[in-house]
Image (cartoon, rainbow, N blue to C red; front, side, top):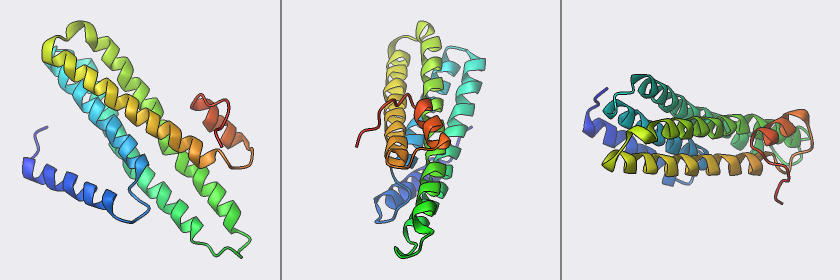
Length: 182
């Protein structure tokens, strides 16, 4: 899939400008998802060069999934911002914030899981890669790990101070969090 370089640059520039703005979204969650999307794109490219079409297709799927997770994160965190905007004297505020934070953590948990899948593909491609392709896999691995670390921290931050619930516990277990940092 070849895209117009100017259109793609405009889209990237627009995202960076929105990221830099004083608005609640996009933020770190979108960055985590897009790190994972970039890692998957690099993996897809390497897979095509080493003629591993099944791995290229899976990497393409992970790239698309990660892009969707960036949009999902932005939408979910918009709901968190709306919950925080409820007046402090409204008794529904605390529950609305907790519910929104729990929902907003799901896309981030999926980013972590997607990044792990990207890392698995990197391991599968490593034996066939050499030279520049190997350095592209290293880059993909570093970016996937960054996306995963950011997303995992977002989950911890979102639900760490929420009251215990099955949903909170399930999310933290998925992230491998046994003790929440305060």
